Image 1 (cartoon, rainbow, N blue to C red):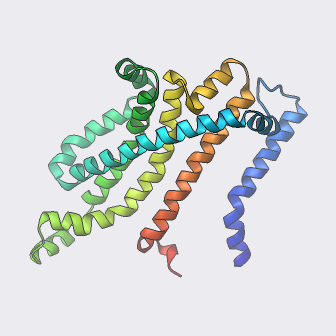
Image 2: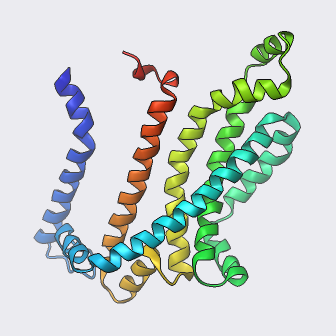
Image 3: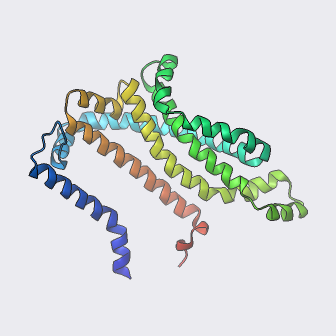
Length: 255
């Protein structure tokens, strides 16, 4: 049993190493040029050679993403609470939110550039626009799926609508909330990099765009590795917080 648990814990790392090995073997066997498809060794060399520019770009992308993500949490929670707390608001606003979410965010970036200029502003707003929807939907779903029978019992006991939402609805929405955070944080990084590649003057997206235009694909792939590592780290962070704050919602947490 213990070996099975260890294998499950290390399975992502084992799979990652196996994929890297296959990738390296294919690139070496077919002698693929760096400007076409760089091997893991070439990407590692690029990360070592350009460690300072990559670190500076990564920090820029990280704090911009966190700023847009924080904004998405505030707006997403407030909007989700509004949409999920009343049937009329849910019926009126939810289709509009779905329609807005369907709009390609790449089409919005040029508009943001006209309004806010090239730089940090479009990146923050794109990260926000692409990540607030999952938070809103999950909070609204958690509140809207409160059983009518439970709500009726609480009202018979003297609870008002506000009491039901705050003391029962919101705690029940926490698992939905953390699930949305894990999705939204990865989308926020996508939004930031998209804006940096389209209208940025710094960050990982700008570095990747510059590297690609110079046919330095190893450096561009190094940027992808850094973005993936940051997104995965934040995903694991929210998973850790979820496990330690909503253990009651997970069967496997109790043994």
